[in-house]
Image 1 (cartoon, helix red, strand yellow):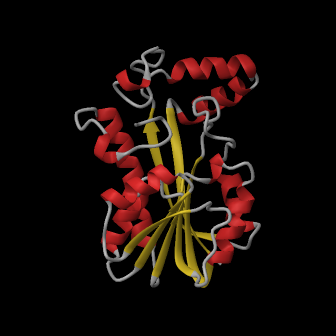
Image 2 (spheres, one colour):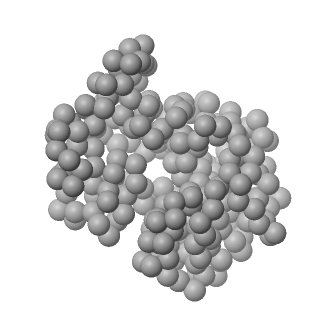
Length: 240
């Protein structure tokens, strides 16, 4: 089932412009990652249902691509729907995942904002990365805690880059995306199965968040003045 947090492309309504735009943004991130991937092995950490990992494997047929995710149902879906000779999926915790051989490229998109301790994941990524490897990561750089109950941290561009620089990783390429807000059905009370798009009804959760965290509204207002009615996302290519 589609939620505000996880999408399954094969289940999206092809006639819903809003959901298709969301899918486009996700695929553009993976396309950027594919363009900057290098070496013989690629690891997609927190790969979800596998559509992006499949894109990486398609565009790098001579490289071995591995997708890892904690959600067993998502991995089962990936194994059923996305199959290539150079592609494999594993159910594992990204913070604890280990490998005898390092990876030349590690991709981790929209992951760290979900974790209690983002540094723990980056430390593990550094351990898994080859000495000349590339780490490609993305994060929202506008506030998200009010609209997404799955997110535990907000990041700015500065705090995102600092997280990696503290582990001696520097950004050599970046890609910024803009997603304009969808206001239609913002305060809908329809159940998930009857929603016309993924963000329908989010306004109710936002208001509830402000009731519990009224000062957060100031952060949202500042972001609106700076970026307008939009969410911003940053994807970076890091190297040692």
